[in-house]
Image (cartoon, rainbow over all chains, first blue to last red; front, side, top):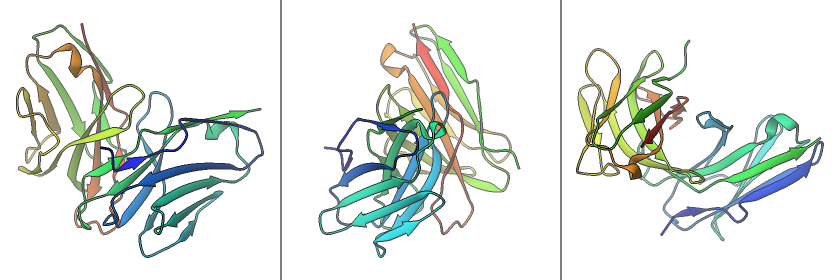
Length: 114
Length: 115
């Protein structure tokens, strides 16, 4: 089965609210995780990444949390804006640190209502 | 610095025809990856190439699919005798030589429709 999966397929929030997108993974050997944003008709765009030796990493308006105990990953978007509307994918690296073969989850569609 | 370029953006083929998808990596990138995305699904790894070498093709079907990344020119994903099940979006990504950050930069994709 899929090693990476998402809890919710869709998420609808009001502009200005915070968004939380969740992701579960099953391979405890995964050592690198990435969140991508994909807008309609475009390729995935890198948002933020985190290595397995970290619990939290912050970027501009985004925070990724990693809970290795329960194999859970989340993406938090602060003050969500209409431009954040997209499908969000988590991806993991299953190659023992090698630079290839990302495994993607199915994605969560985030809709931001003005 | 131009991003990853893919062409064509849209490709329509009849069953049995050949499809050729091209990918030009970012300048200075020598690692190329191809992924396939079915509607409402995540991307699935197909193949990883470096210049003139296929490093990992474990995600690519053994029949009808092939990929290359020549010394000069773009990477090509070739699908022979296409079938309706090949209809999908095909994304190419590239990364810098010797990258320690794993970051892959994706192109806009080629949407293949088989009629």
